[in-house]
Image (cartoon, rainbow, N blue to C red; front, side, top):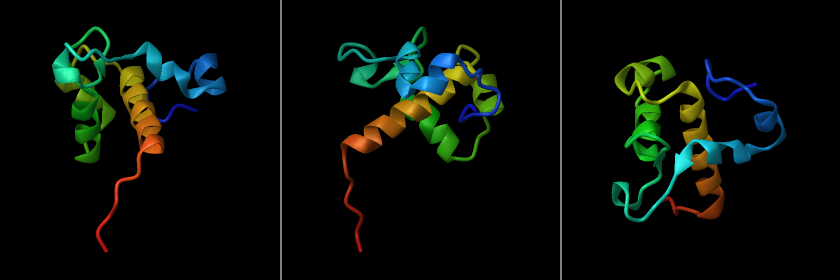
Length: 92
């Protein structure tokens, strides 16, 4: 089942979380080095910030028509991968 309602679930997504790589690009010379949705200039942090602010996938797609529901799911998966790499200390 897709993480995001409206995203198309592929066999590849069922087997592995690597499918986010199909939608996310990173280049230190583009978008100030931030990851972005391939084929756009919409960065992953913009997508994640919108989701964190409570926007629905449909609202994000409406605001950024070049971004698909699948790409939004890929941004979530990419963010999850990054969260596994680093621990951010929380103040007590």
